[in-house]
View 1 (cartoon, rainbow, N blue to C red):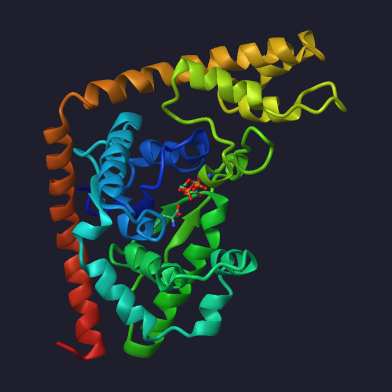
View 2 (spheres, rainbow, N blue to C red):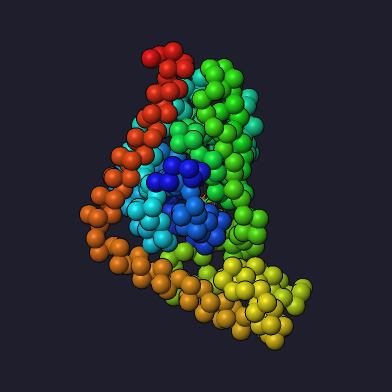
Length: 316
Ligand code: ADP
Ligand code: TRP
C-alpha cells in the first residue's frame, strides 16, 4: 500500500446480479482508481440482510458478488476486498453513532421516506442504515467514496456523523467526499427510468447473449423524435458519441436496426467479462480464501480506528 495515497472505500449490497448501471455508475470507477488510491471494496452483506433473509441465498449472493468484483478487474494485490460482516468494528461503531443521532434526523433520509410513502412497516435495520454506512466509511478514514447519485445523501450522513462525533468527543474521524461521475450518475434502464434491480429494467452486467437480446428488445422507444432516446442513452455507454451520431443519423427512424447495433456493441463489451467470470468460477476455494484474507486486512485498519473511538468515548 502506498502510504501517501488517499483512501477510497466503496461497496455494493449482495442483493442480486449487478447490472450495467452498477458498473458504469460505480464499479468502473473503482477499477480505474485502484492504482492511485489505497482502496477498500466491500460486500455490504449486513446492509443486504435488510433485503435477503434466507441463509443459503445470502451465501450464494456473497460468493457471486465476490466473483463479479474480481471479474470486472478489482485486484486483491492492489486493493483490500472484503465483506462487511467479517469486520465486527462496523456494527460496533454503528451503535456508537446511533447514540449521538436523533430519530428526526434519520427520518429525513430518502430511503426511509420512500419506504414510509409505500406504507411499509420499516425495519429498524432499514431505519439505521445510514449509521452502518457511516461506520463503513469512517472506520477507514476514507477520503473519497465513489457511488451513484442515489447514494449522495448517505455520504452526507456519514460526513454529518463524523462532524457530530468530532464535536462531541474530539477530532477523530475524517470527513469523506462522495465521487459522483456526472455523465453516468444515473444510467437509465430499459423503461427510461433509473436502471435498478428493484424496477426489473436492467441489463445484467454478465448477461448471456440471449439476455442481452431480450433486454434490448424491451427498451421502450417513443416515436416522437428521430432518435430513440432510451436506446441512444444506453448505447453511448458503449460507443463513442461521434461514432454514434453517424450511426443514428444513417438509421433515422430505423429502431430495429439501431437496437441490433446496440445488441452487438453490448455483446462485444460483455463477452470478455463473461469469460473471465466463468474462469474464476472454476476455483471457488481461491475466491473464498481471497475474501477471507481481505477481511483480515480490513480488520487491521478498522480495529485500530475503533480503538481510537472507544478511547474518546471513555469506555477504554
Ligand atoms: P440497485 O438500484 O440496482 O439496487 P444498488 O443500490 O445496489 O443498485 O447500487 C449499487 C451501486 O451502483 C451504488 O453505488 C449506486 O449508486 C450505483 N447505481 C445503481 N444503479 C445505478 C444507475 N442506474 N446509474 C448509476 N449508478 C447506479
Ligand atoms: N448503500 C450502498 C448501496 O446501496 C452500499 C453501501 C454500504 C456502501 N456501505 C457503503 C457504498 C459504504 C459506499 C460506501 O449501494
